[in-house]
Image 1: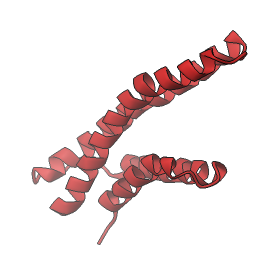
Image 2: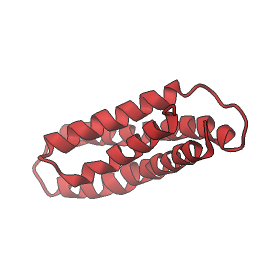
Image 3: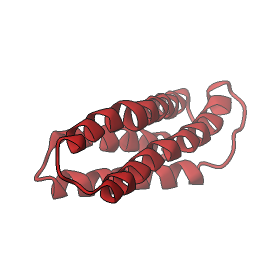
Image 4: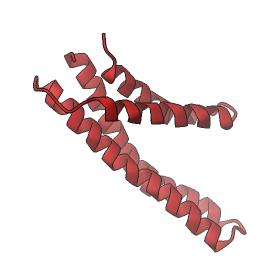
Length: 126
């Protein structure tokens, strides 16, 4: 794996880790604030918060898996297999693509597609 692909993987890892904070803390503050101004039932809001924050929490191990995969390679050492990173890439691209289409092409969802593409390029062969 060459240095450029390792750098792409590390950039994706940092984006994913930063996104975890933005999603779980900042994102929920905004969404929770909007929901507070509605008549949404408390159990619905709680369920949304749990799912929302869970999504942000799983970004942490995703980012750490990416770091542990691409940091050794960046330093010229063999790293773990890239298959887990490829699965994360497929998840980001698939979920981001679905959200992009399902939201009537809201470009916001490139926030998932772009890191997924970076990961896919990082694990590519060639």
